[in-house]
Image 1 (tube, rainbow, N blue to C red):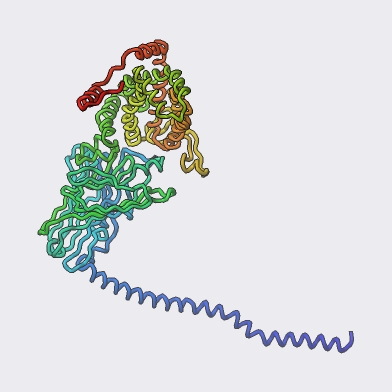
Image 2 (cartoon, helix red, strand yellow):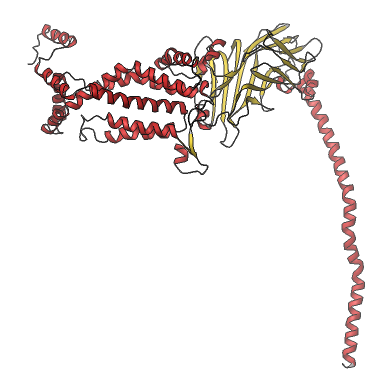
Length: 617
């Protein structure tokens, strides 16, 4: 290595050293900067927090001043500590909230939901039960936001069977002998809870023109049953018109529905399939605004129900507003004992269907329930009793079909002789045959139509009968909902939407036996050319009902299955009783006899003769 190379290397090293030395302060400065920032940042944050705290304090001060201006003498009642109090008997446990003084939760002690947890009708801070009014200084007051305190020292009352009644008072003390009391009265072995609002000294507080006080009641309705879709179909807001009938909120099956009522109401009910929360006014509600919001299927709640109503008052030193709560099951006898037509919450149908349920199905069912504890056996015996009562109609229907069957060769001969283009002539020939043979072509349909109200009554009775709830029979664990023998979670297009993610065995058996009865009772008197597609529809209808009833009560499909089995047995018995050859011979003998005119026809012909018309031979 020559001298120049050595000098070059030394020079490069010196340059690097000098450059490094010159850059060292800057590097230290870079290292120290984050440290400086980390030291200064808390100071900056502290200053920010101090400024924010000062601003917050000022805002709170302004809000407090604003609230004082808005609520006036009610302002101190907006602050408090949330506390809970309970009223309890052997049937239910009612939790009261200090905030709002309202019923915070209701638990029915003798019932469990589908998860084997206690049935809670509603629960939580989302519940609203508030009386709203304006003060003389035009302040809007909502009792739901104010803190009540108990008038007594106890925070838990149990009403024993030997007790006549116990009361619990929640007081909103405004001061200067002005207060609002919520008086709750519970009875032993009862789902009734008396509720009185006593407003003392409020005549000087309320606005001078006050004639009504507004009530707002809102609650989230939890799912209680396994069949969510089926339960939701029976979940709605019900109400009774003052001195009139009971109605359900129209369109409540929609995702959201608002319904305004300008009529007086006696009570308002948040109704589920088997349980209800009802508020009954001793006088009446002036009007109401009802709202129902359907929640998503993944929610533990079915709906949010809301009711706003006006309550008429007369200003005085003491104003008393008496009400009654009913928190309990939709049991027909229990609701009927409450009065005020509460039994209408059990959907028994309308008109003749309702009468069939009230005076036939329910009395027989309750009578059998006194001696038999197995509800599957009760339904079997009930079905046999009903089929025996309908036996004359069933036999009449079968006999009419048998007559049409033996006449079928003659009917086919007329159809072959008269072309389809001459439909009127063919129809006249057929009616002439029926008339001579003494056969009513609708004779098989009329008895079936008379049985229809009972079938519809059962369709109403079983899904709403709380006695069947969580009662097992054979493979069905709960007769009030579907009896799934196979379930899946995967969504299958069309199937999951219209059929469901399960297979109900009783529904399947019902469908199979219905198809058998359709096959046995098919009208062989009508040819395929006369009624194209009719045969297909008779077989398609049971399949359609299978899709509809797959989510319904197992008791209902079990009943229809039993009806089909008994009907098949009856048809086989009738076949042994009715000799078709003798029946045909009798019909042919009828054709030889002169056709007897009905009294109505004789009167028509006599009227025609009186007017100068001669009857056609």
